[in-house]
Amino acid sequence: MKGKNSKRLDSIKAAHQVERTRSSTRMEDYLEVIAELVELKGYATTLDISRYMNVSAPSVTKMLQRLDENGFLEYEKYHGINLTEKGTEIAEGIRQKHGILLEFFEMLGIGYDTASQDTEGIEHHLNPKTIKQLRKFVTFLKANPKIIDNFKNL
Image 1 (cartoon, rainbow, N blue to C red):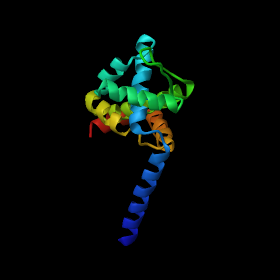
Image 2 (image 1 turned 45 degrees about the vertical axis):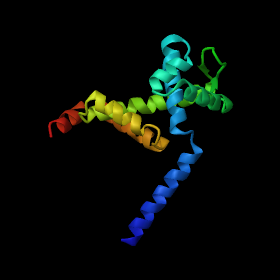
Image 3 (image 1 turned 45 degrees about the horizontal axis):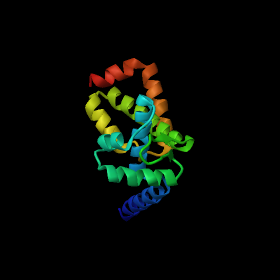
Protein backbone atom coordinates (compact mmCIF):
# COMPACT_ATOMS: atom_id res chain seq x y z
CA MET A 1 0.00 0.00 0.00
CA LYS A 2 2.89 2.33 0.71
CA GLY A 3 3.96 2.09 -2.93
CA LYS A 4 0.61 3.41 -4.18
CA ASN A 5 0.76 6.39 -1.83
CA SER A 6 4.30 7.17 -2.92
CA LYS A 7 3.29 7.02 -6.61
CA ARG A 8 0.33 9.29 -5.91
CA LEU A 9 2.57 11.80 -4.14
CA ASP A 10 5.06 11.68 -7.02
CA SER A 11 2.20 12.27 -9.43
CA ILE A 12 1.00 15.32 -7.48
CA LYS A 13 4.54 16.68 -7.33
CA ALA A 14 5.04 16.20 -11.08
CA ALA A 15 1.73 17.89 -11.86
CA HIS A 16 2.75 20.96 -9.88
CA GLN A 17 6.18 21.10 -11.54
CA VAL A 18 4.57 20.98 -14.98
CA GLU A 19 2.07 23.64 -13.96
CA ARG A 20 4.86 26.06 -13.05
CA THR A 21 6.39 25.81 -16.53
CA ARG A 22 3.12 26.56 -18.31
CA SER A 23 1.39 29.89 -18.56
CA SER A 24 -0.79 30.34 -15.55
CA THR A 25 -4.41 29.34 -15.83
CA ARG A 26 -5.42 32.93 -15.17
CA MET A 27 -3.27 34.19 -18.02
CA GLU A 28 -4.81 31.61 -20.33
CA ASP A 29 -8.30 32.71 -19.24
CA TYR A 30 -7.42 36.30 -20.14
CA LEU A 31 -6.02 35.25 -23.52
CA GLU A 32 -9.15 33.22 -24.20
CA VAL A 33 -11.46 36.15 -23.35
CA ILE A 34 -9.37 38.59 -25.39
CA ALA A 35 -9.45 36.24 -28.40
CA GLU A 36 -13.23 35.91 -28.17
CA LEU A 37 -13.68 39.69 -27.91
CA VAL A 38 -11.32 40.34 -30.83
CA GLU A 39 -13.23 37.81 -32.92
CA LEU A 40 -16.53 39.40 -31.91
CA LYS A 41 -15.68 43.06 -32.46
CA GLY A 42 -12.13 43.34 -33.79
CA TYR A 43 -10.47 44.40 -30.52
CA ALA A 44 -10.84 44.12 -26.75
CA THR A 45 -10.89 46.84 -24.11
CA THR A 46 -9.98 46.77 -20.44
CA LEU A 47 -13.63 47.37 -19.58
CA ASP A 48 -14.81 44.46 -21.77
CA ILE A 49 -12.29 42.11 -20.20
CA SER A 50 -13.20 43.33 -16.73
CA ARG A 51 -16.87 42.51 -17.34
CA TYR A 52 -16.22 39.01 -18.69
CA MET A 53 -13.54 38.08 -16.17
CA ASN A 54 -15.56 39.58 -13.32
CA VAL A 55 -12.54 41.47 -11.97
CA SER A 56 -11.74 45.15 -11.45
CA ALA A 57 -10.32 47.30 -14.23
CA PRO A 58 -7.03 47.81 -12.30
CA SER A 59 -6.65 44.01 -12.03
CA VAL A 60 -7.14 43.73 -15.78
CA THR A 61 -4.57 46.47 -16.42
CA LYS A 62 -2.03 44.67 -14.24
CA MET A 63 -2.57 41.36 -16.07
CA LEU A 64 -2.47 43.07 -19.47
CA GLN A 65 0.92 44.53 -18.61
CA ARG A 66 2.12 41.05 -17.64
CA LEU A 67 0.75 39.54 -20.87
CA ASP A 68 2.37 42.35 -22.85
CA GLU A 69 5.73 41.77 -21.13
CA ASN A 70 5.51 38.08 -22.04
CA GLY A 71 4.79 38.87 -25.70
CA PHE A 72 1.20 37.61 -25.74
CA LEU A 73 -0.51 40.83 -26.75
CA GLU A 74 -0.17 44.30 -28.13
CA TYR A 75 -1.39 46.67 -25.47
CA GLU A 76 -1.45 50.41 -25.33
CA LYS A 77 -3.21 52.06 -22.42
CA TYR A 78 -6.60 53.51 -23.45
CA HIS A 79 -6.51 51.76 -26.85
CA GLY A 80 -7.81 48.45 -28.11
CA ILE A 81 -6.01 45.23 -27.24
CA ASN A 82 -4.98 42.61 -29.76
CA LEU A 83 -3.16 39.32 -29.40
CA THR A 84 0.24 38.66 -30.91
CA GLU A 85 0.82 35.47 -32.89
CA LYS A 86 2.13 33.85 -29.69
CA GLY A 87 -0.99 34.93 -27.75
CA THR A 88 -3.28 33.78 -30.55
CA GLU A 89 -1.64 30.34 -30.60
CA ILE A 90 -2.24 29.84 -26.88
CA ALA A 91 -5.82 31.14 -27.09
CA GLU A 92 -6.54 28.88 -30.07
CA GLY A 93 -5.11 25.87 -28.24
CA ILE A 94 -7.39 26.56 -25.27
CA ARG A 95 -10.35 27.02 -27.63
CA GLN A 96 -9.65 23.64 -29.25
CA LYS A 97 -9.34 21.91 -25.87
CA HIS A 98 -12.58 23.56 -24.81
CA GLY A 99 -14.39 22.35 -27.93
CA ILE A 100 -13.18 18.77 -27.58
CA LEU A 101 -14.05 18.56 -23.89
CA LEU A 102 -17.43 20.18 -24.36
CA GLU A 103 -18.31 17.83 -27.21
CA PHE A 104 -17.18 14.81 -25.18
CA PHE A 105 -19.21 15.82 -22.11
CA GLU A 106 -22.29 16.43 -24.24
CA MET A 107 -21.84 12.97 -25.81
CA LEU A 108 -21.97 11.60 -22.28
CA GLY A 109 -25.39 13.18 -21.92
CA ILE A 110 -24.26 16.05 -19.69
CA GLY A 111 -26.27 19.19 -20.34
CA TYR A 112 -24.60 22.13 -22.05
CA ASP A 113 -24.48 24.41 -19.00
CA THR A 114 -22.88 21.78 -16.75
CA ALA A 115 -20.57 20.57 -19.52
CA SER A 116 -19.44 24.13 -20.22
CA GLN A 117 -18.83 24.85 -16.55
CA ASP A 118 -16.83 21.64 -16.08
CA THR A 119 -14.85 22.32 -19.24
CA GLU A 120 -13.80 25.75 -17.97
CA GLY A 121 -12.53 24.07 -14.82
CA ILE A 122 -10.26 21.50 -16.49
CA GLU A 123 -9.33 22.75 -19.96
CA HIS A 124 -6.10 24.35 -18.71
CA HIS A 125 -4.85 21.31 -16.84
CA LEU A 126 -4.82 18.54 -19.42
CA ASN A 127 -1.66 17.27 -21.04
CA PRO A 128 -1.60 17.70 -24.85
CA LYS A 129 -1.30 13.89 -25.18
CA THR A 130 -4.54 13.48 -23.23
CA ILE A 131 -6.32 15.98 -25.48
CA LYS A 132 -4.98 14.24 -28.58
CA GLN A 133 -6.34 10.88 -27.43
CA LEU A 134 -9.63 12.43 -26.37
CA ARG A 135 -9.95 14.04 -29.83
CA LYS A 136 -9.41 10.60 -31.43
CA PHE A 137 -12.02 9.08 -29.13
CA VAL A 138 -14.58 11.82 -29.89
CA THR A 139 -13.95 11.32 -33.62
CA PHE A 140 -14.46 7.57 -33.20
CA LEU A 141 -17.71 8.10 -31.29
CA LYS A 142 -19.01 10.53 -33.92
CA ALA A 143 -18.31 7.92 -36.61
CA ASN A 144 -20.20 5.32 -34.53
CA PRO A 145 -23.31 7.10 -33.22
CA LYS A 146 -24.95 3.85 -32.11
CA ILE A 147 -22.33 3.58 -29.36
CA ILE A 148 -23.38 7.00 -28.05
CA ASP A 149 -27.07 6.08 -28.26
CA ASN A 150 -26.46 2.80 -26.42
CA PHE A 151 -24.46 4.58 -23.72
CA LYS A 152 -27.16 7.20 -23.19
CA ASN A 153 -29.76 4.43 -22.82
CA LEU A 154 -27.88 2.69 -19.99
